[in-house]
Amino acid sequence: MLAFRHAFSVLSPIAESVENNEYFLRGSPVLWVLVFLTGGIVEEFWRAVCIVSFQGNGYSRSSVLLLTAFAFALAHTCGLPSRISPGIPSVLTEIIVGLMLGGLFMWSGNLVTPCVASIIYFTVSFFLVRKRFGGLTPSMRRH
Image 1: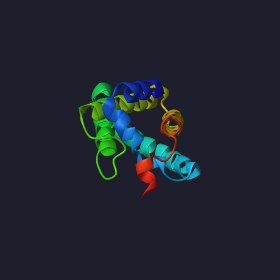
Image 2 (image 1 turned 135 degrees about the vertical axis):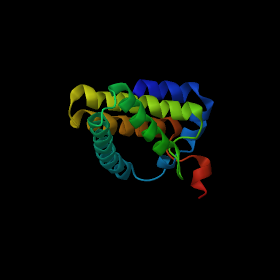
Image 3 (image 1 turned 90 degrees about the vertical axis):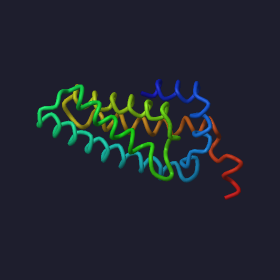
């Protein structure tokens, strides 16, 4: 997931522009890591409930993965402030990450594996973006 996200951010001018203005370039790293810990557990619990519910209602494994990945992509790319810019490349990136995390849950059969993967993914992505753009950008320092 990290390699995919990194390749997308390096190869896409849209992703570079968005990452340079990410809202998590501001604030305490400790606070953000706590957000990622909480978010990783809550999101993966919700994903697991969706997967188990859909499968319990007779949906195939592939349709369950696609439905949950699409739902998470939609949630991650809408709202203010959005983590990623809206658009087809951003939505596809989130869908692919969602497929990977959902696949981890289905493969492992437990909640721990995708929770740990999600927490590591978001935390490492956070520090990579901070390292790449040096924390606060000049335009953010004025606010």
